[in-house]
Structures are given as structure tokens and as C-alpha cells.
Length: 325
Image (cartoon, rainbow, N blue to C red; front, side):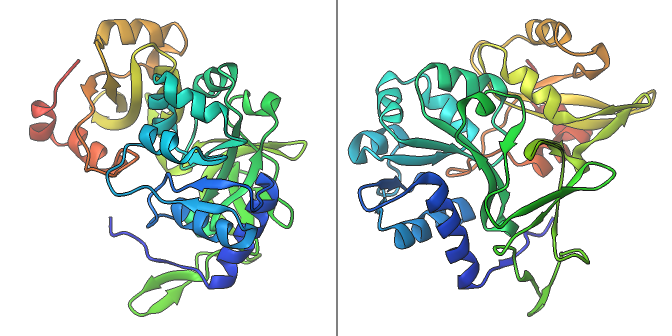
């Protein structure tokens, strides 16, 4: 799929930075580590938070590993994706620097419950947020440890933001930070609905103002008449010792229509052990038909490419060349 060019006016970035800085309680004594690529909204937003709050922005030289950047700059606030946090939890020196932060903000996709609990139990001041490029970073967040521990919690909406769910549990966001449109053929195309909200494509629940995000609506598939949400299987896999990353995609099946297969990263992994552990937690029809080793991805890519993995799994020749666990 062709990448979308998301257009934001400067005022949207400033509004996002002001809300985020208030949530994080940023000030001139803080040091923000540029821990995410600056060409993504998560990294770019750090620049604007620094400008509006007076906090220092620490910019590691190209190629510096994250654990070295933590030791060098000793930030008071850092933003991470789940893959980064999972790797840092195995490094005691890095853990000491994370514990010294005032806030470690998780974003860029779901953070599994088991990973949240492990980090909090290790003394890391974890916060979670929910947003998208189109919303100019996070629009819901919480630093409440009791909430952060709970499965799928993203927190309440930030002041001035609105989160609503339709009858199919799909999430839409109203915010002063929403995109002006997608830049297509020299013009702007707005994806906003009639109420001026952005349909995120995610599904969730909203209880007492607390948003829980369960996954992407467009990732649900049907296997033998049963709805399968890949994120549920991925979270269960990530709770298994030795699993560092997990992505589940559907493949065509003559009997069931579609079946899940899993791409896994980690050490000393065995398909039979993974399958047994998964079946102890989930219904049997959710257990993947195959477990593949996660392919290497380009340097600097923090998240797996779902489209690429789906294409590999559904191409018979490509799948035959994948490493099975």
C-alpha cells in the first residue's frame, strides 16, 4: 500500500505539545530523550514538547544504541514502543536509568499487559498513551499505575479531546490536533466524519471515561465462523518466556476460510511448546497453524511490517522459504 502523507499545520503540533507537556508535567529542569525516529510523529512531537515546555531535547548521534543514550543523557522522560521496552528490561544498567525517569511513556502501538506489569514491578514509572499520526500524537493517556496494569487500558481523554465509539465499538476522536487531511495529488483529502472526528480504525471499549483499545477493526478475520482478533493471540504469545515479538496474520484455508499463523522473534523457541502454552490460555481455534521465525527488518524500523508479513505468509513460494520453528 502506498504510504499516506499526513498534513498538519503548525498550530496542531503546538496544541498537541501543550497538552502532552501538561500531562507529563514538563518544565525547564527536564531532559527529553529523542528515543523515536524524528520522521515519525512520536519523535517529532518531542521537539515541540521541548519548545513549549523549555525542557532540554537530548539528540543521540546516529547509530547510538538506546541503552547507551540512556546512560549518556540520563533523561527525565523517555518515550518507547513495546519492542524497545522489552529489550531494555533485560539490561540492568538500562533499567536503572529508566527507574530514574519521572515518566516512561509507552506508545506506537499496544503494550502487552504482561510487559506493563513486569516494568511496573521493576520500579519503572510507566505511563501509556493512545493516538495516531492523524491525531498528532496521543489524545488519551494515564500515569495511574493501577490503570496501567490493566489489559488494553489507554486511559481517559486528555482535556479538550473527545473519544466516542459507534455501535460496532469502533473508536473516533475529536481533537484540536486532528490532521488537516491526507496530501494526495497536490490537494488535501479529509478523512474526518460528519461530526469532524477522525475514525481511527481501532475497536475498543469506554467505561467510566477510561478507554481500552482491543485492536484494529481491519485485522479481524473469520475462521470457521469465529471472529479472530490477531492482537489477542499476539498478547498471549508475548506473555510466554523467550518471546520478544509476535505478529499474527491470516492465511487462506480451504476448510475454515482463514487460519492464523504467527511470526515470532526470540531465543530458543519451540513451536510445540509455544502451541501448548497458547492453548492453555486461549480457545484452541485461535492457536496458529504455523510458527515462523520473524524476518530481519530494515535498520531503524521499530515495528514489524504487517503488510509484508501477510504477503509472505500468503505466498506459497515465499512461505516455503520461511524458517519454521
